[in-house]
Image (tube, rainbow, N blue to C red; front, side):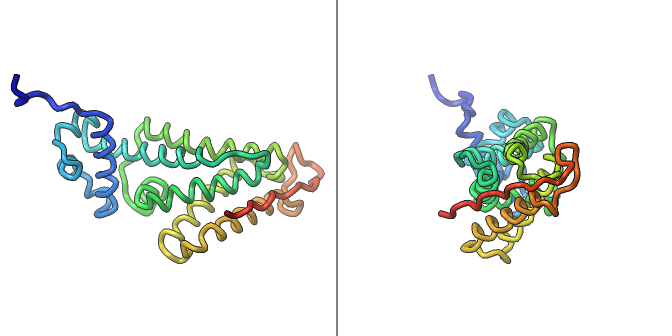
Length: 224
């Protein structure tokens, strides 16, 4: 039987190639550069493949968002945990979040900051984003159990931590923080934040810390 007219199988490899192409298109021209035709041409496939795998351009963009959050989770998961929650919180941020942002700066800018315009996240993309955020929340909860947050809530520290990491990543991507100094600067900044949160002066009275009892600061991570 002739292969002419036989439907092409659109598998996970094709899906991955289309997402890689879409990421490259974002790097070259922003989200406006992503189209069904451009993605198909860049991946060496057909527009039909895009429709079969993603349904539409919007579906491709949402899949790209989920890829970004998934890559972050994979990178954070490569960092082994120890019996020091403070060090783990810092090292997972430096070796996880920082590495992801530097390896995929365009995905980071598009889906983790307000710098670039993008469509609203779909329900599925939002769920993936919240799953990624939960990694950070769990690390912060461990630090809280260890008494490292002073009178601050997990919700507050999650906001502080996310803001600092996002800002550090932007400064390193844009250039003011030199790549050779990035790991040291991140480690010092995050250590200072965590130490301040757990200090007596920085702690606020709460039901679990009414007398403002001293907290032990995080152990400074050993740099490679």
